[in-house]
Length: 148
Image (tube, rainbow, N blue to C red; front, top):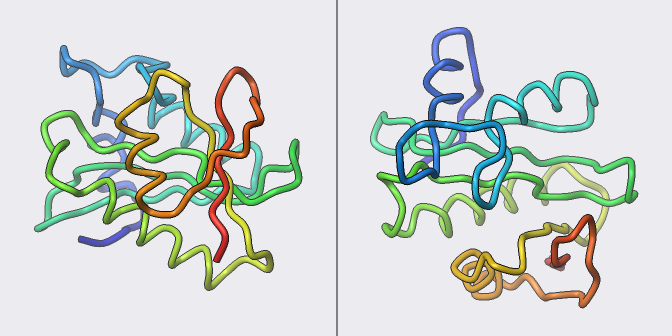
């Protein structure tokens, strides 16, 4: 598995990846904003990196990470694995790859992420990787911190 750039050759496939049961992407999915919205956000805000997640030459997911100006911290802002690829350990592996890449490029020892209090599976994965719930709520989501 690897993180790859989003290009003119794969962007359409990336934006149609979804976590929805119906296999149709929406602007705001159950626990994550759509990949299309995230790519636009990254373009206009300028502090985010977007990558597709590829496994065995198939696009299986998407991530967005970088500097959150609003809260003055580095954040794993989006991580999604397409519905048909979930439950195979790809999310855990992808998060570790993103953290490794962030470790090499940021000048802080902490990375944050936030998630819906209802995202039980996601929170379990984050905690197993080493994220700790800070007890803070940001925009209605629980804030987690990973320390390198």
